[in-house]
Amino acid sequence: MTLSFAAPSDGAIPLHVIEQSELEGWLSDQPDAVRSWVEANGFTGAIGQALLVPGVDGVGMALAGYGTAAKRARKRFPLAAAAEKLPEGAYRIASGVGDDALPTECVGWLIGGYAFDRYKKQSPAKARLIAPDSVDAARIEAQVNAEALIRDLVNTPASDMGPEALQAAAEGLAGEFGATCDTITGDALLAQNFPMIHTVGRAAEQAPRLIEMNWGASGPKLTLVGKGVCFDTGGLDLKPAAAMGLMKKDMGGAANVLGLARMIMALELPLQLRMLIPAVENSVAGNAFRPGDILTSRKGLTVEINNTDAEGRLVLADALALADEGAPDLVISMATLTGAARVALGADLAPFYTDDDTAASALAQAAIEAADPVWRMPFHEPYEALIEPGIADLDNAPSGGFAGSITAALFLRRFVTESRYLHFDIYAWQRSKEPGRTKGGLGQGPRALLAALPELLGL
Ligand code: BES
Ligand code: ZN
Ligand code: ZN
Image (cartoon, rainbow, N blue to C red; front, side, top):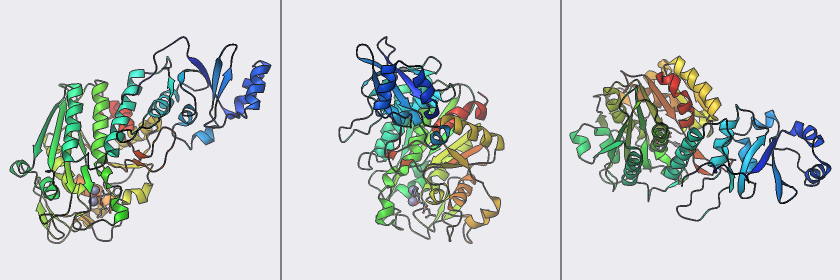
């Protein structure tokens, strides 16, 4: 599905976005007929209210409630709440949204047109928005179509989004934007020294693989690494049903880096992009890896498996080691890595880790601008001891589980020693419908990163 602004047209319905406290003043400038229509329909300017106002012939204008600043702070896309209720038609924002908020409100409106309709016909919001003059329409459309891609990939169940399909999705994206895409599959992973990717994925019907996409010939080097666990049963340390139910989304990191890559390529950012996705299914079979096994990683560090459910860090470790060998200017990993990240920050806020204070503050600021909330968590050095077992270099699942998101991040950092590193421990899932967000797969971080990239890479 491609989401876009409506083509400019003379017949567009002017939309006035009205702050609750300003309704009275606005009404006092209107003719009596408008005033009584608005009052009779109980329009108060609350967030989510939408009203068509008759004109001399047909619809004269539309109103959308914009609440108060305090109420808007509780929503990510406040205008989308009203847009979803407007009837089919093309609208142009005639008043009421400040230039600062306009790009985000446009993203929210357009992504309201998303629906996951692969298995059943759906009815997404129908009101179409004409791009306001002051916004960069291409940039907004790039963000929205990246988000739609992320949601589609995450929403598609493992029966149709195994490692093969994830590879096909990466190849499809590469083809669309003239990138190259190469994949190392099955035993070739052993021959080319990606032992942990192979070990985690070897019990599944579809062979484990490392997908690599490259794009861009000049500029700073950015390498994205996404966790592509297409289904996470937990392995022999099997997850209980309640925890396994959602694990089709365990490739959410891969989906998010594909989304970020899509934006970078669509906007032709002047950089050299490399994207790596270890794609596996963490399954149960006679050849599954076991608790107590000790693996030797690509980097040479040995890892004691204390829980086969802590598989994401294993496949990422080999991909991160490869990323680091290229010594890019920045490595970013995105992964649905730990339940502990949800305990720490909940579903809405994506924790990120970096040693670069400047990057962290650029990202925090960009996240606010992009309405893509992220929050820095620490690579707390005193916890390093927690990931060091007695008989191997690293422990994949420290006992006790305290600070689980931090210990997972510290584990990954051991594999990135040459490059600047940013790591996101995301959820990639929206638990219930909100304006601009369907229940299901969700992008977390890519829009914040897009906004921060000029500062992160000196573009
Ligand atoms: N994919 C899960 C993490 C996860 C769970 C993300 C729920 C989002 C929602 C990951 O592979 C996992 O199972 N991690 C374990 C690690 C533990 C065994 C050290 C976890 O978080 O419980
Ligand atoms: Zn797991
Ligand atoms: Zn997992």
